[in-house]
Length: 197
Image (cartoon, rainbow, N blue to C red; front, side):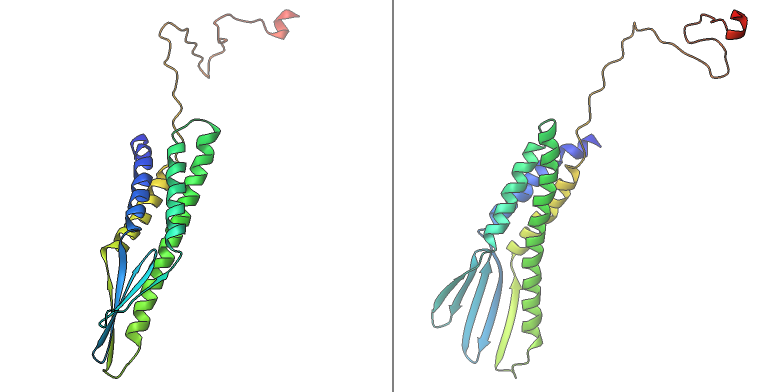
């Protein structure tokens, strides 16, 4: 079990690094064709870039990257602090599970929005003149994997560090007492109160 706990910090750090990498990757692309005009909407954590066949470029900013990266940094710092002893480690274990949970929640919300957008696009009937197609890119899979890895690592970090047991002294005196024996622990018979009278 201690081997699993040792994997906690590397897993959380890996999840944080993957989240940082995802900040530079596009997540999904929506391609909309109206008659002969094609619009492409490429969404990343930082926003959506819009391209048209007439070479129009528009960029809209979103705030998904900031909470994703902030929670990723917090969970990595908390995971590293779990390697310390005492109260710092106990507080860090709470911090790492909280930050990893927040990170996974933000990622889940982002993925749900993408799925809903795909369902809305597939639900409209444009009469054949307009087609909408959503394509998931590797960035969204990498971001989802980062959230899963971080949650697993944070769960493993909840195991407290095992306390080192002192080595038994081979020359120490060992006292055995049997349950059905009247002999006292040190082998010296003690007079009963009735005998003393």
